[in-house]
Image (cartoon, rainbow, N blue to C red):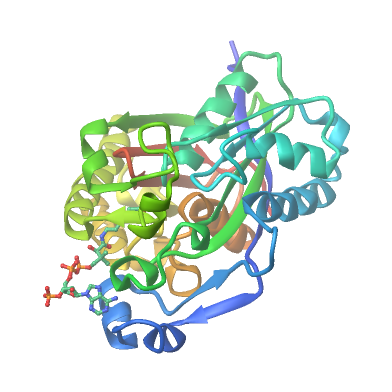
Length: 331
Ligand code: UT7
């Protein structure tokens, strides 16, 4: 019997206009273009400026473009999931706000927080709703205004992150395309290395928490780096092996953009040449939940129906995961 699967049928993304270059960062903290480029691969990142604009602004831009591009009416959408670590507010969910601002009225919607792995966790979650046969059109948004939680006096973190958002439309298919396999993992003991200290229920906002700059990203870079290099490569190789794939069977690796050295190490372990690896970290930095939709959007014109994609991410939590996707359409 043919199996009902979920497939990405359209994609759109949005990065705000303002570009923060390594040269500008040199004037803000004790850093250099040379250090940032060799340690991370980043040259510039986009920053959302303007009062009152949060993550939903990025999501709305991406979703409006997606609806237009795919010729979909907002009324047709059954579910919208927003992967983010920088919601507009603690509640309601940014997904609810995006639906309101894009005219999506017949859907239910919620946020999913799995740090930098949130977008792929959300893709798999959405795919299960499609595979149930009940839901026909689902939007998954990955968006973060990282500049809202970055301390621009901390050189260890402020050079890394940027703002962006993307959105994909998922629809059912009986063809041999779409979401084929996945591995998702988490290990909460890794939280000590990457987190935001205050603003949650353990440590609500106070004068002290603000004075001590505890509402920003706290990261022990080396510990996260070691974890990421090992685990992202391990699961990417594992998913290749259990699907009997060799490097020549893979059209593209679509890796979370946190550090060029982590991306290259993962590709090496998978036996992939650089020309099969999507990389745009130099232009956007680490946009957390925005990285993977931004990649797919930029590469969409090069993707062909039936292409085998390995999509991999890791992030705070720790969380990590990989998806084997057969691309569903020719652009
Ligand atoms: O997506 C979320 C998951 N996050 C990640 O994947 C991040 C993983 N970690 C990394 O990408 C890297 O660890 C970083 C890019 C964050 C840092 O690179 P690193 O090679 O691990 O550097 P480090 O932290 O070991 O620091 C090396 C040196 C230190 O100086 P000393 O102690 O050797 O004198 C730092 O103080 O570089 C210094 N340093 C900087 N120097 C210039 C740290 N940040 C900077 C900077 N500019 N921006």
